[in-house]
Image (cartoon, rainbow, N blue to C red; front, side):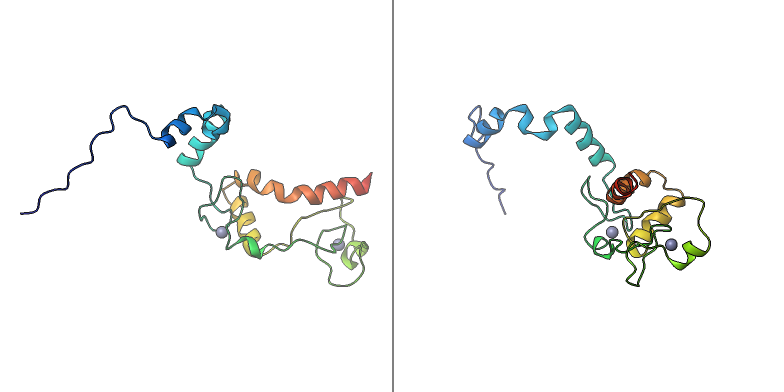
Length: 152
Ligand SMILES: [Zn+2]
Ligand SMILES: [Zn+2]
């Protein structure tokens, strides 16, 4: 016959040093004690953030998971007319297509080359997951800021 182990004696009202430290923590030191932190924590608990491309769990402020993020390639040396990457050395000049048949808009900008995880996320956004536009928006901020400062 095996007897169950005895449970440790109740601590009653005695508190450990860690308990006291936790109770003395100021409310603003704990992000869940603020209203915004409470709302954010609750939303993260109910609807955890997912990678925009593959649905793996990510932190609330993260767009792509660790496996998808390396596939993003910042757009360098793009045509200012169509924002497509240029493989030649003509930095800042419009591509042949834009010079031949100009678009009805003056300038275009993009933050990253289209492909891999970014393409998956954009396709998901276009086909039903419109809420994802808010998560992908920060990827355009730098490119749009550069475009605005160049056109001033
Ligand atoms: Zn992913
Ligand atoms: Zn072009």
